[in-house]
Image 1 (tube, helix red, strand yellow):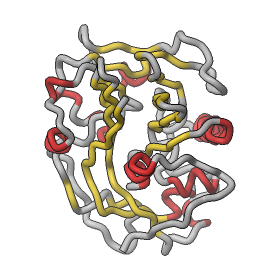
Image 2 (cartoon, rainbow, N blue to C red):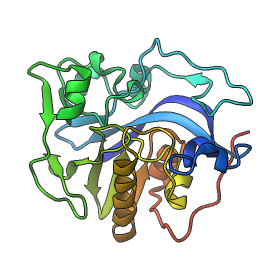
Image 3 (tube, one colour):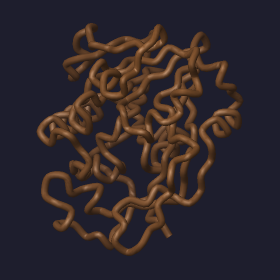
Length: 259
């Protein structure tokens, strides 16, 4: 199995209040502290399938201009999703499956580029996006528990879609098992790894109680299983992958702050 990051937007930042303030409020945190932000999605090459986990933002996606009050700046370096895919050695025709963690445009924006790939996502999100067709597979999580998670669906050997509601009402995460490690592709359960270590929810959610439950389940999983945490909105996502960095909640790494 090969896992690669498809880099989309780089050189952004988020404030601590945005990343940590979901339950207590962003004003309770120090918004002069900013964490690095980016957007990358991921590719899993099993040898039999080329699977995309989320599909980046569309080419028409507006990049916001930051000022002193901006809670989240996506970044100032934009690479078209298909260009990034090509740089990894893949054409869009190579993609056989897509797994969407949730409906938001920064995760589903370029799905139209892959009409021949089977698309797996929760039934709730498929309905929210009004996705229909023979290639759309609305997942109802009929494969039972996966470790401490209640609901799962096996996509292919070693790759599982896990229900993780809260950020959206159909939010999911993906876990791939390879060579004794668990690679967790998480659908905005946290925006930055610092929030995972600090046990804090972001300010973006549809159900705060469910979001808390999802984060608790993620933290329990990573405590008990060697997990490489692959986030969408921080360069720690691709850095963790490159270094095969396993999450240790008792020993958070020193943060690298944006310039």
